[in-house]
Length: 109
Image (cartoon, rainbow, N blue to C red):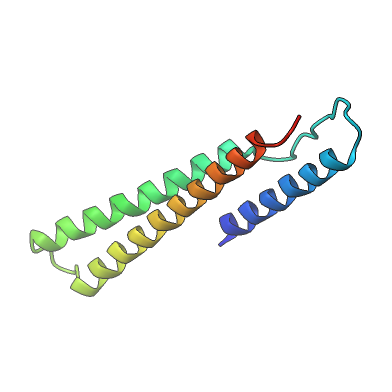
């Protein structure tokens, strides 16, 4: 959930910068540095987390298939659903980033 909040904050910051840029006369605009981790770092962490979720799901599924004791079908199904949902969320974030990039590239300079 915190990744979604961070993405929404980033989008709001980008829109605020867009409005400021459109309101200012044509001059050089300095872009402020973001404190803490960069967006690339956050995105990389999200991709790694989704990858970890998918690998855990695959390992649990494999353990169930070979008949390992203590592995329940419901746990396997829940892990698969978590992996699927996290991948879909990551795909939606990617779509929003691509749309934001396209919006920025279409801005008049």
